Length: 121
Image (cartoon, rainbow, N blue to C red):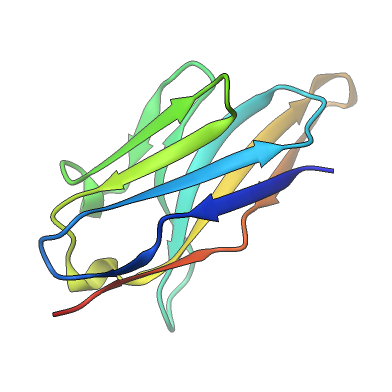
């Protein structure tokens, strides 16, 4: 049973920084992509950043140049360093892990419990 444990959210002033982390455990298959999504009140969940098993990264346009995703493959942990935070970054941030079960030709998605990030003065 795959479990994701997130940490690092909180309240920060505009222009400040936060670092989120998410550790995955319990998978017997290799982890493929690790992603961060966010959902603000009244809005749909959106991809913030993702990193593949080969270290390729993708970012939402709104966070490019401010957020950095990284990954510790040995610890099955993904990080999101968020700098120059803006009030519009306020949301619940969710960790997402994709695990490919090759012999069954399927990809399983797992989600963390979410961590609140609030940017306000």
